[in-house]
Image 1 (cartoon, rainbow, N blue to C red):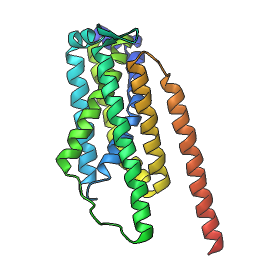
Image 2: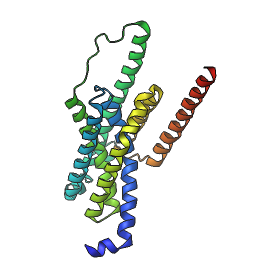
Image 3: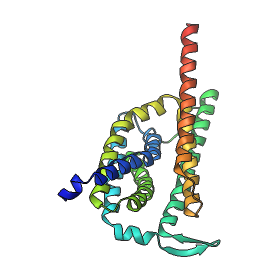
Image 4: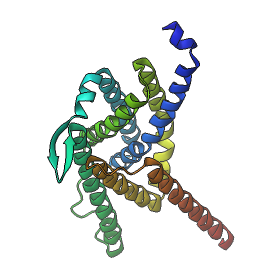
Length: 245
């Protein structure tokens, strides 16, 4: 154990894996933000913390069962000439769920804007319970956690390094989730952009399940570029408004 602590390779692996876990957790934060935004304002921070705590527990449990994780990569059956494993099934189901939730949220947002314009806002609208939000967050946590854990297992062979990286990454995400959520909820255009990102991630998960690998770097670069342009648009609109006043 002491030898591992004094080995520079251990610290390099820890930093690399922590950064990877943070990057892979971006879509998780966006999803938690969208779902928690459906709750009353007083419950939203608690839902975000609970969702990330669930992500931490899920990832640590998956890391503690590496033998089961390895079995998930073994083919179960073949479909259209492609062998489908347990991991592939989880990714496909998670991607379909993400597509469904994102599409439903976009439809609700558009329908809500239309109802506000014609004066019918609030009619027949039903709220969502705290427990239901947490269950949905936990389901997607399993999907995102499985993907990141399998990646971690392929990069590092030290279980303690993997667990430490997961804990550090989730702590950083806990510090960042509220500012990110406030930004998304404050500006409707950013929220719509975030929902579009989730559609993109859902399609990527389905493609990954069927053996079509889409490098995550492309997805995250597209997300970063689009978000940067939207932030510039918001700043430009603020500047124009201040000059007019």
